[in-house]
Length: 562
Image 1 (cartoon, rainbow, N blue to C red):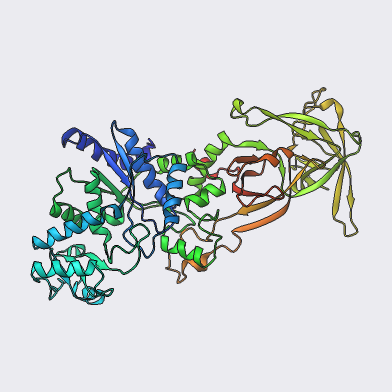
Image 2: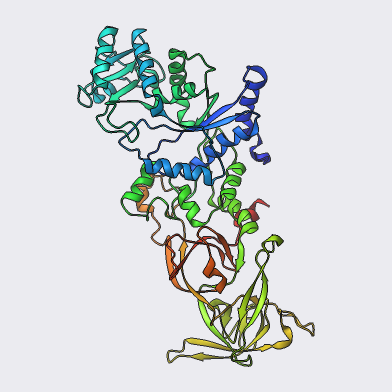
């Protein structure tokens, strides 16, 4: 865990609770779980929960962490989402081993628990529809009204529940409610629903059930069944904790009862974290699927080139707090960039090319210069990069009439072509409209390797690609999907869709890359020298390479931090 002094206290409060339980409350084995509902793809906020729950299981001897799908709402859930979630958890570096569960595994057990509560006078079948239930629930200042079915004989409720399960009633006809207190100050405790009728097939149980458990009923009891010791969830569930405890105590499973602990969810600038909003973005084609590189989903971040270690380091850096806050995007990219700097191979790629012709270089000669793959890691070795008479450089590395502090190429100026030679510009070719079409230069043969034998120095070093050997590529440059830091804030009268950045994706097909990149692998990270970090996209083919921009080289947050 991070030891950032600014977040030391908040970082440690979850672990302090756990350690107190070990030292003072007889806890012998710590068991956590990550329990997503399979109704969408995971996002960066889920990554924080994954790192916290699985991370705790790695800190204590004998500790475990389950992966459990809370699959109690078949209308929105799908196997596609389960598969994506499993892939995301593994990609982040965690493994549940043989501890994969579903709430649907416990449907029979939960149904038996419901029958038990009915017999004990702690639950009843209610005939009020959802609108009537809301109308009788009361307000924060006023008590609710008892259902006319609250004192229904338990035998009748048991019979009705069985008929509900067997599909004898239409959706909305009845619900099963816990009998707690309609005057309770916490409105979650005012006879909450336990089951509702839904005549819809479940992706695991098929048409076996016509009723499905509510989240609050299934979640805590699933924790209890699995022997979870600490149920770590986000802060919005704090108000649900008394109900969580009430259900677990009412059923009285003969195991150590789980303890719910809440922490603040992750809010990241220029993103939305609501699954409903993310689903809307996908369904209305504002993005190109759940793994669009502009999405805050883990799948999208993986496709864009963010690394699992960078994301884990980010979750560690921001820590665990009890107070909601907005994390800057610079903080996130700082963590990713720190990792990319260590793992990304350095390559030469010219994104906006202009041709350079070295007039005094032999016409058919080709040299190969040995270049480090990654100066941060000697084990990555070297490669050979071809050099010839005609090359490409970036257009912004040349000015016909450069100002005094422009240290790149200009007429009469000498620069170093990285790892190759000193080059001096002599003249330019232009078309009839006055646009430069080629830059004519000469080279110093004695400066091979980019070093001058007479000790003269040049201030500019630029990258290049041999025109004869260059490969073409499409570059997809990404910016924030939203134009404002907090797109969910509607105080300006606009909804989040009105804040979509229309320039969040820019596509260019003119890039020229060094030939080693013809063997690039999907998902591998590269630093395009002086341009930024990129990765090969899954849309690529042998005929067309496509690279996604990950992040730039500049680290504004790191500079502020220091």
